[in-house]
Length: 94
Length: 478
Image 1 (cartoon, rainbow over the protein chains, first blue to last red):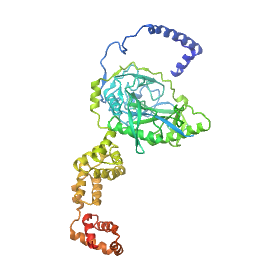
Image 2: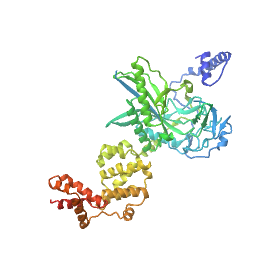
Image 3: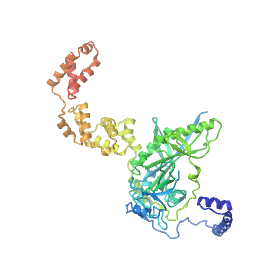
Image 4: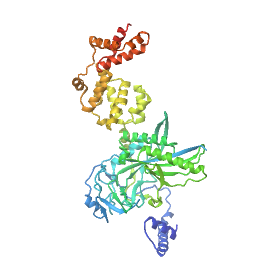
């Protein structure tokens, strides 16, 4: 699989990234070569091997349904670029 | 041309947990803005989600309750999109391998039962809430993250619903199941249940589906029904005039009672799902599943059928009594103490329901416990209270929370059965209505009820109607 500049453009748009034409061409080239490299794995014969998601078997990690203290409103909003009263203030979305 | 509509519903129900699905923040409704957040649900870098076991258990219950299959291994996935109410930039959901598949919900409509298939039930987290203050000059929206990470199940139906009324009935039945099993409060007003609809139309008899649209932003079950009606009419009009339905997402506008296309830039449908690397696959052991199965209560449909069989109730009475688990429990407790199923059903379905409606309360909040209703009906049955008096006593009990005995004693409400006293009232009534007396004597026997009624009225509801009836007959020469 190879990346075309148009693919890069699409993913850049979904990721809210503004790229120049030059960058689109360069990333298409670089991403294609990354894919090609990783693609070598596809050549390994995996027939007869059970599917597994983790290399190390791990016990499930659970959280009990217990309420723990939350941050204060001030702490929650401390990193917000902008706020109004108790809320995060963002450019209008509707 | 005659058309048939094809409807599938996606319902999001909030699981009734105390804490969020991946962190310990409270899920309490109505808290101060952004007061229930932490680094995990705020999407701070480097944090890890840890799954709330109770949320999984409730999701398992819902799957078993609709007769679906629990997958021994399911996978969480990231759904990627940008929106201010989603701080992480992705929602943790399930995609290719959901927790539950299959099952069905039995829907009752016009006396007919129909099964609507369930495609899947999966776990996911809720997003936050954004507000858009009114006003032309206002160029901002506000975001509250409290809802972020609240556990949800999404229940996707098969496209087997054929009319807006059926969609409504499906939602009622589903809500009932979720409430019975205590999976969710399923309260649409508090956002604990939300519903999107997919709808298309096709000429009757055609097998292939038409082009569908997706409806969002309905705030009640009735709004879902209405939005579907409006959208079906719109699609038919387009096709009839030679046009083509465009596949798109439409927003229901409750004020205008109309649908309008969602602006394309608001959402992208390219979510680039991929397996959530921060969570292990969700494995459900047979033992766990068995213990959840054992904890399932009797479901509404089974209970309704049992009420019809065991208590010989009508379909109508049984449906009303099983509409909520707490009401069905109340009924069974009362019948256990006063085994007259039909009479208890009537009193609950008419009198008790009236109070619940009037006071806008649930049966749990009613000040009259089931045992006291049973005691009241026993008194009525033994003729120590008349029907009118019993209603008056119940009303007082609802207001004050006092026992039957206390209310009866306080009001001096004892049914008058002394023949001498009754006889006096009957005589007075008969002489007050000479015309009716003559008609009765001339053969108009149905006037008996009239004389009894007048006598009971005269006594202030105290007269024992059975004895009055005997006395009236005696005086009028029978």
